[in-house]
Image 1 (cartoon, rainbow, N blue to C red):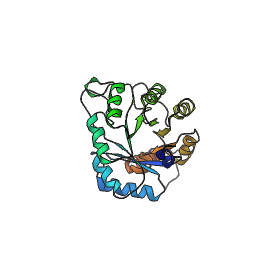
Image 2 (tube, rainbow, N blue to C red):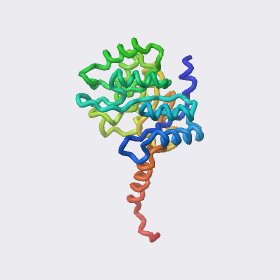
Image 3 (cartoon, rainbow, N blue to C red):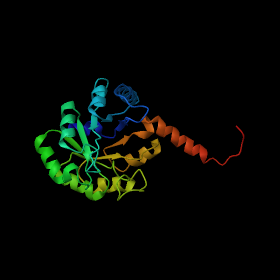
Image 4 (cartoon, rainbow, N blue to C red):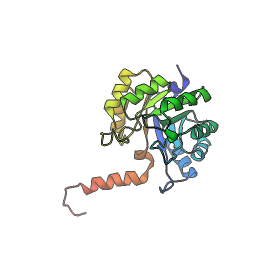
Length: 234
């Protein structure tokens, strides 16, 4: 069995990401966030940008799922969209590289099938994770030779917008019908949901916003507060 599968089996992977317009942005902050996650028992980290990844590597020894979010004007694909981002992540030494594996065309009008064939030929020993939204995409990712398939983009593409998250049905179908290891991701906001997700039989699960984004967590509580019906004075 692949050592990476053994290391990630039934583990919580914590996504430590903050974009430039977010208060927690900064490699030092993400490194501290990853340290806290690992002290809490996380078995893996998902991180964005080479700078954040290198900072996290200095303070943790768990597997890292690396991505680079890059917007190109001619494509809706922004998670590790081109060979430039793949090469940078390989050079950074991440254990797993995740990329958008939906049917959407990549920058330059490149199809996933053609792109990943080039990627696999260039980096034959690297582990790759397919970020997908629909079953057909997961099936294709398995056929193309991805090492892991994730449910990361369910609810975030035009065809799946509005889908209830976490997408338990997609996770369960992947586990039942695919042979590649499944990493659950997307919309897991409580320990109870995490238990439900892992009980589908997935290899591991990624939790991000509910752990590492104070803005999101605060909004979640404020929204709950706004729905209170009690008129009791505080």
